[in-house]
Image 1 (cartoon, one colour):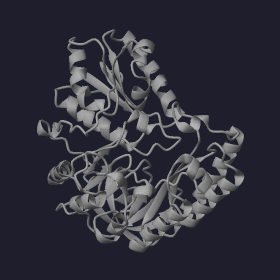
Image 2: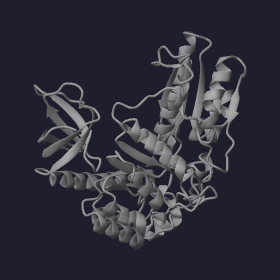
Image 3: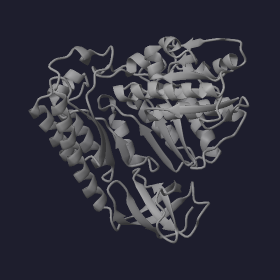
Image 4: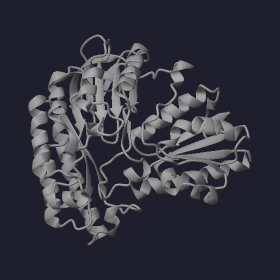
Length: 449
């Protein structure tokens, strides 16, 4: 069978799609482009309204392929699947499988049964209370990414119930993996050639704080994974400020391969808005975390998420967000206008901010962020670093080949080199020569390794 997967949303969705691809390939299925596939999988996101609308548009595009082969069918997974459920069967008759974030474990088997005619439609929408370990496709087919980078889930779901967030309703309550399962997976990846691992979770800082926990904290897990011989770089995402431990903050100064970068969602700089969002930290608490991180690792790069136009946000509240962005000096941020999501507490909060006002605030915020980003990158000119090569740069202007990679903090660095192939997955010593709008240019200063 030939299949095609389309992914919307967060890095966890990307990781889920990568796992599903390997699981299907281990069954003898073949990944294909959208014009040749017989089975289409759409992995969805509903954290905001726009990604949800993209799902319906994508299913409309898939429907056009039925003219090519009436036996074509689709599966919808992820957060929108959990939210809409069997409603997809009525609206799109060619959808034969819907599965939520907990149901993905059984999705490969369900797809096989449907393709063989053993089942007509399957809904995998039940939440489970304990993390179910997924099959390891590498046991049957070894498939190591050329970039020698890998993502490892350490947990599923979230217990925070922020007033604007649909995640606890679509991904379920928090479930931590057994720490030894995480360490074993990471060790196997490193032994197979992986050099960089990113640990994933809705809130990694609360790892182990659920009934699946066995007394191992996230700080403990970081130390265990960091200690794996041959692991060059370790990252993690996403962190909730309310749960970050002093031991995790200290780890940035203690663990040599823990990269000096942290995505720490602020959402708002106003205590009034943070309280309405149910974020359970204050402006002062957030700043104390930032100060601790910069003390432990002075070169740490902080990035964040921000919501503007939350119900009840005043101009003063918004100004406090601008002040916090400037005070912290985030090197980059993901910023969005608030949008109502079904079933969340903020849906009924008043007063709503005028969309025109919210758009104007978003523009002001993004203008400030662009200026901060430009200055941060400009200050790096002349410095030396190590770049982990991920592939060819999008633009190829010179006589040599331009390669794209990332420095330890995760910044994109483009470097021209004599080699036209064979550089992916290597570390290259580089001197930064030029700061661009959102990336850096550099020149090689030594041999790759």
